[in-house]
Image 1 (cartoon, rainbow, N blue to C red):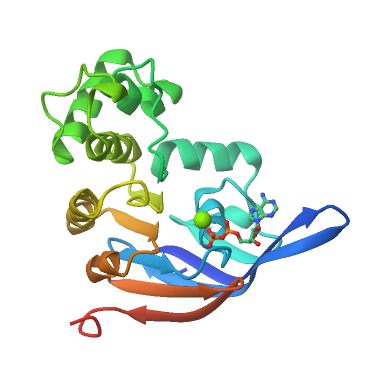
Image 2 (image 1 turned 120 degrees about the vertical axis):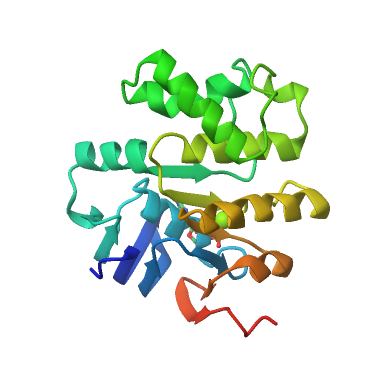
Length: 234
Ligand SMILES: Nc1ncnc2c1ncn2[C@@H]1O[C@H](COP(=O)(O)OP(=O)(O)O)[C@@H](O)[C@H]1O
Ligand SMILES: [Mg+2]
């Protein structure tokens, strides 16, 4: 794979069993995402956006083709290697934030580090830094229910970048937010991209495409187009 590509997919296919039949979620998808860029996956519901993000995250495995993520050939990784890559390098952001309600924001953010054996003090320091990067300083001891939806999503993003994570995968990250808050969250993701984080997100909202360096359009599991957005969107 090219040295500065964060993700290289070649001929990727994925199907799911549905009773006695199979649903083809992705067919023959090939693309290369340079490190430090923001890519938006777009396309109608059911077009394969979430499936592609799950493959990038190592949460699902490709049925066909090859997939390189951060220099690892994930189609050939053992489950243990995949889990280590996921925990150490990749953050996933969900539409519904997925914070644990019984933990404070900083406890949520430091969770991935504690899961990989980082000492509590070091994990707390890194979590504080990650929270500051997304504009949450001062809210460390709040519980999720005590902050706004936008702040919950910022915490989910902080959890995705905490430590040495360099790849953030976000599935409809603004889907549960009003348009003003959604725009703020896109601004946070674009700022992380400017700091060198690779961001891949799915979105239905055309307004979110203005921040994208690349736009991948999916339809029925096929990649219809993969464009560099600069200039085209102006
Ligand atoms: N775990 C699964 N089991 C069965 N079918 C699935 C599963 N995940 C996705 N699919 C199917 O794959 C297709 C693509 O789904 P998805 O990736 O969720 O699309 P999108 O995120 O663009 O809405 C859909 O037909 C969906 O029903
Ligand atoms: Mg989806």
